[in-house]
Length: 113
Image (tube, rainbow, N blue to C red; front, top):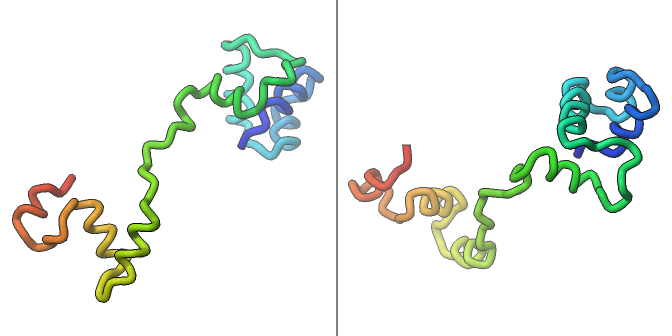
């Protein structure tokens, strides 16, 4: 994760973007974007203590941390994998297609392309 607090602190001390990038181990593009977003949101050093790097990221990039992935049902997977002939590949295919009928017309018509 980018250390936004440290970037803004070093900016307030007058360090160049290259020096800041080297210090916080981020790219110069990241430093430049942070400077620009801090100006847009009027964030200047000193920052309030309750404003963490995570809160700054949420301010700069709303919705970035929202995951669209489904969490696997590990208990179900474990139970299914205990059955003979079931592999992770089969479980994945079943999840993607929503059916066990791999060769049927119905399975192919449900496929997302």
